[in-house]
Amino acid sequence: MPTPDASGTPTPAGHGSGRARRPRRRAAKAHRMGFVTILGRPNAGKSTLLNALLKEKLAITSPRPQTTRQQLLGILTHDDYQIVFWDTPGYMRRTRDALDRRMLGHVQEAMLAADVALLVAEPRPPGETERSLLKALAAEETPTVIAVNKVDKVSKPTLLPVIQAYNELAPAAEIVPISALNADGTDLLVQLLVERLPRRGPEYAADELTDRSERFLASEMVREQLFRRFGQEVPYDTAVEVEEFAEADGVERTKDYLRVIVYVNRASQRRILIGKGGSAMKEVATAARLQMEDLFGRPLFLEVWVQVWGEWRDDPAFLEDVGY
Image (cartoon, rainbow, N blue to C red; front, side):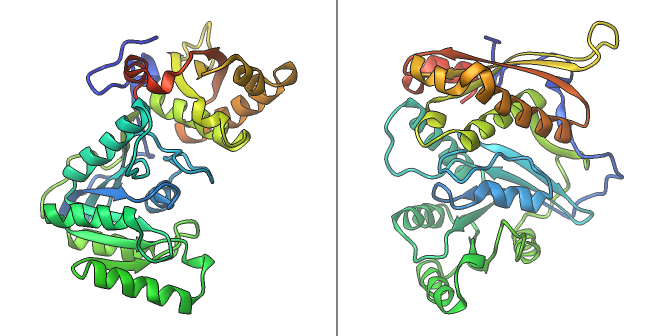
């Protein structure tokens, strides 16, 4: 297991240690720059919204709640501004194990670091999760924008009382109806966020998309496919670690080589993930590899192995090692 660096992310070699970047373009001085923390209940569409705002598939998504396990930084740079988004795990008012506690800690850290908070809510009246978050943000006097997401799934008469309820609950917040899936309303959302950012220059290069390494992004893409491929229970009992990331040398290796370990709690789960003749894991590895090649812009060779590590969700040392 690689030794993690100070941030908890395993230290890679070669391309795996580089930051994922957009195609290079001319940098321009941003008039406004700040950190926007994306908050909300599980499955509200936070990661889908981040991808829509960046116009890049950076954050993993799935129809299942609690897909995101840690903060993911995404950078949106324009001639007039630079927004640094923090995508966070779904907010939990109660925790069950060490993993849940670490996820809640990530949310709380990102809230404290925010110049502006972006609360993503579903098109229904605010519940205890939204009330708790808005109360905490008001106590910190954090400028807040509320994005009522998934409006493509409800009628206008249904939506209006929801917006009214948020107006009454958080009168200082700006409320924007959006569809993250269709990128509807996102231009107005960006405009409102920029207006609330401090006036200062950029802190990241114009071509930077995230501060996360390709190694981290690779592990997340494997995990996304586990959530998409398997049933309700198994994905939540899986952890993913990139054990080796070796760059192509043009001689012995014509492609970058990745060796990924998927950890599960029980031997029965290992059999499910592997599938008959390895067919299930082969599907996961192929889909993940294609995603990696699209984001990284080069061919890769990916091996995925499955190992049993009992009750890893409640093992703080293990969670630290894999970067959760």
